[in-house]
Image (cartoon, helix red, strand yellow):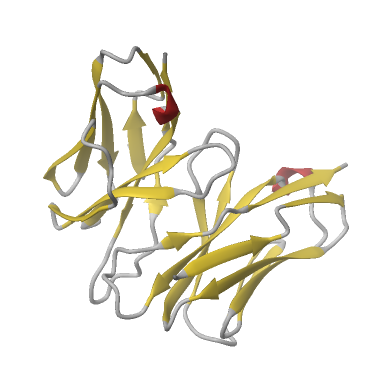
Length: 112
Length: 115
């Protein structure tokens, strides 16, 4: 069964303490991997799309990387406003373009 | 209006009520989605409309009925819901197919409480 897992489930960081979130996937072929940020009670906000192993994308303090079986979201010198749940989603090659599988998310808390 | 909008933002309904959720996308996309998000669970895909045709229905109970009159509007009609249907209902849109980036853009959600 195709699966997307994320770790850790929750992460508490001190302001300025860099860390990484992991997204692992088991699909037979990857068409695209997506990262989203979700604030409580709101809809997910699109961050990045990665298409092939070795690809990297950056936005402010966030950098997403992709290997053949996992993706990392690196957070450099986080600030309290980076606190949110970060979701990973995968689109499998060979399936309909509109089918995406979401992971359970990592809840990040950045303490001042 | 920009992006994806949803109304109402909050809804409380009894189990015998009938209500509808509305979603509108202003992004020119050709696919729209309904998701259910419950506490501590991953996003659950409910329905997909691609070029206004329903392409996915993930074994959703018949008390949820989608409607997509055009590529910009999506409705979710609700009737005789159960308390376990209480959740955040999210609408999303994307551009799929050749040349599409397939990134989904979400609305703010409707927080539904069934009493």
